[in-house]
Length: 314
Image 1 (cartoon, rainbow, N blue to C red):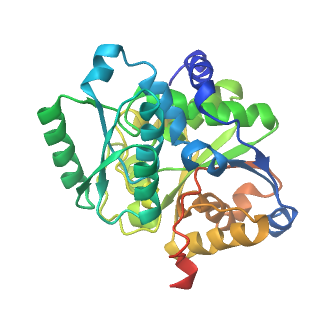
Image 2 (cartoon, one colour):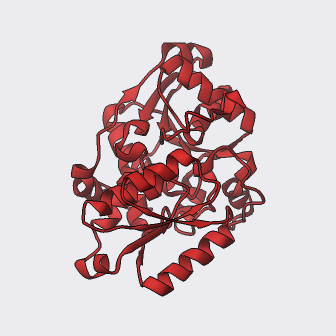
Image 3 (cartoon, helix red, strand yellow):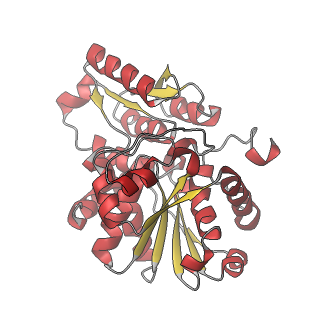
């Protein structure tokens, strides 16, 4: 577990780089589920997602010699855009390795924030090979999207804020991909309230965390054929033990349920959210008994969506 004191330091460190995002509610959704739902809206965050928290916390701890070498990362979009926004303010152009099937809106977001895109195939092997090649050729500093203690500290500030805004939450549901957000959520929440329950929401098409916890050791993804492009990453070696030892459960969700929940949030709450965070509502809708009558927090992790290719129009 990461100490709450380190997450508090991260919060002070990144304050000039982030927004304190709002918490929204919906009476319609509360009635549908018979629970009190509170949506922590990181879709309104700078760069369009929570990722800027971890990126800023990491970059701001690099020294001048490290920064002079340049910065590189691999990202399906949101981390790359967040990192680009932070380091471009320091006069640096980061290299972002991205799968060639990344939604155009996320590629544009990286470029708009000052990043240089290098393509890879949409699989872990290709991503890691190209990333390693770039590091060897340029000696750039890797800012990993999730497998870094500094990243987890930064992502933990989401829930630190959330529980200040809604101190009576009984449960929090977070998306789970590489594990930075969920492990940060656990570290903040369990330090502030030992009785709070934390669940991860994961696509069935990329369910490595669910299977890894079941087996006790990290399992590779059998598939990443999910609309949740932000949740295709392999669970990290640093987040995994935090999650394995402290999460109440990983709830795996079908693609149709994710899309239906995304549309439901758009229609009822009038906000733009990604599939990768609409999965939290889907997890609650598919497990109503688990959350019945509870005060439940949902982390809405991002809102970078290609408006020309909405999943319910396909």
